[in-house]
Image (cartoon, rainbow, N blue to C red; front, top):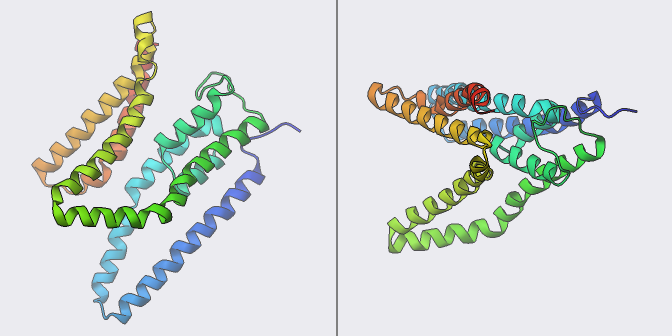
Length: 246
């Protein structure tokens, strides 16, 4: 039997997991509404909060759909749908999948890439197990880290900001390494290594422009849609960049 990354059985298994997650969300939403009524919160305020939260989930949802479409070509629809519906991001999932594929001598986006069952399971295993490390570490070190930050903040609040910003920059630096990992090939005549660099710079410029427009116009809604706008624009610009740089 030929392996199919979009087999109905995979969709059924993924749908079951996502339904469980959605059920948890509905459960805690109902509990929150019940508790809000017990506290005597204004019903109009509760309704406004629920509606505004629902509306502003559209922005991240657009980003998720883009990510699913991006990964669907090589990994099928079901697995990216699962990974990005529960916990994950395009940057992480792409790096994890590529790392697994590199061990097989393959790469995401390779023409004619057709994964067999063993390769597919290996990729899914790497993507899933790797992201679970954060979930397992959070209850172990999360409380101690929070206490440490509170202790530092009492002495000097500036050091808390420095520490948090340093961790964020460290995370960004890890992904920048992925963008520039093939940059040395440019000196060998392979200009295709410039494609991810140009896409990153274009997305960053568009994100900055969104911030500028928001500042000048006071349109706060742009803050929620700046990410999907920059992502869509960056992916669209990747097409002419690829045609130009090969």
